[in-house]
Image (cartoon, rainbow over all chains, first blue to last red; front, top):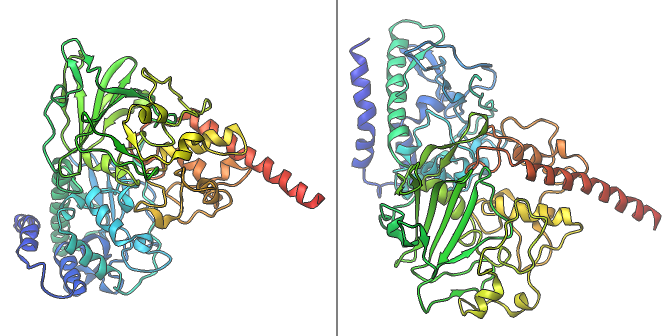
Length: 181
Length: 372
């Protein structure tokens, strides 16, 4: 188990390099977006994880639908130094100094999808500024928007185009929880 | 750097691997979040490393501002946690602002703006805008040393803890991305120096109204000096003012124009929200009333109460979504979402009064209609 940590860390560090190595001009935007979403780790947090036959895996029946609405978390995790954060088993709830964040429903569900009110420009600006719709409240950790914000406009447009056409999943993600006083 | 542990039931080595992998990614995220500045667009140039180099002062040792720069004060100031502000503008000699679009003045290349923020008499920061040769605006902020004798460029990601405020909060000098989040959301990137803000018909009821510094810059002054050209004549003949039912409403609309309208307007990227709080000097009607009073909240913010179904519920400020958001500093709910750590109590009282009075005026209108 322990030997896997350096390997996975290296994979995480190499992801941006892998992305840069791709030719941004090849393929239709949706295919390009699917590719980027698959390598940029979006499913790691935005798709609930389950125990599959081979171990933990993203539940692709609920792909990109965010933290399950029926999975209640009511308070930040209690951890002791040197730890400062925790995640839940579906990898969709994250606790830290910011409180508790729940991964958003990125599917185009017209009632519960977080991007339902986003324009393409707002999506790009959100990745650039780390703010909701580019100008609003801060996006909470661990969303690595500073890394994704370095994507080209074309790549971010491709990601947005892909997300707009994935199967919609109705799932109302709960609001974030504030940190302990 | 933060670290995480996994909670919940483990189930053998699969979960261990999963936890390790995601943990590594979270650690990476924290490294990225804490060390890398977020810049929405490539910077057009590197700002000067000191405030002195921007040319604000004729004599920096004496902190004497160059008398060639014009001091000004907008009639509706932006709330910045109670900071006292001083502002200056400088146009290159022989140039003028093009005011032919009164909603979006065009400033000559080389225009410079400065805004100094002080708390309790202590200078904390000075923000700087400069229109570069390529037409882009350069954004910078300078943090003052504790002795008030030096001001150095703040890194692009901003500076937290710049000054201790009440309630354990502290003033944050915003990063470039946050500066642009507001300044690039309106028709003009320059906020606070435009047609309504410099109207000679100043609103005495504006929250935190400031006395105009010498030489009393307003529309007439700028036109008379040849510094503003093309402004439609009717705006000089009848200086713009917000037409409102009451003095309270005028001040409330003016406050929202200055504190909310740079993002919530009909031309910016948030126009699809349909919330227009920016006053237009070119068109009749008041979008801030049309898009708030009796209008449904489109998407409740985290922490908003379920009974706040309207943006402005006439007569019921406590049930108005707008009221709940300006009265909060919970980061997911608060409005404005950046640039302020403390609730603007004076504005909250004003908006509360306005919404309460809207209820009375609505009832009176209803009675009048029935009586006809």
